[in-house]
Length: 117
Image (cartoon, rainbow, N blue to C red; front, side, top):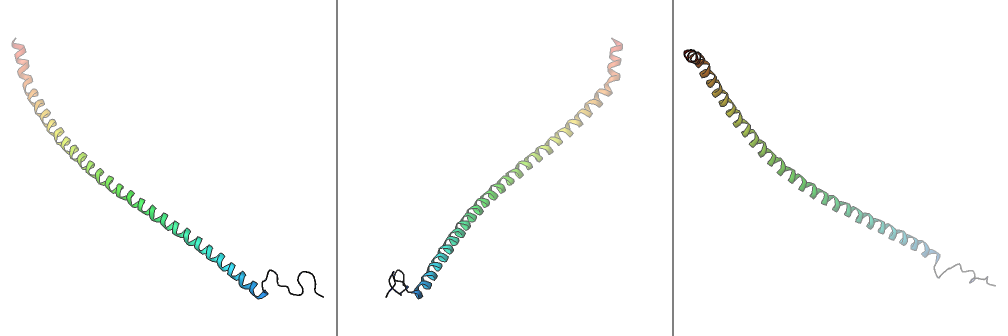
């Protein structure tokens, strides 16, 4: 007699026991391939993001270089203006000293003129 469920054949769904291991391996390989593709895609996305950030960083350094160059020019102009102002102040100081000496020499003459009047 045969038992219920199709007899002594333990073949379920038409699969042979020897094929079950091969199918399991194939499924595992597909899973690994998908994981590798996902990891590769993720690494690619990260590399592209890093490339974009490096480009932005390069632009920032370019702008900084331009700003520093412009600041250098402004500082040179300020330095020139300060030096020019120093020359003008020294010339003014000399003129004041000359005027002071002139007035100091005329004091006696001014007092004599007032005494005569």
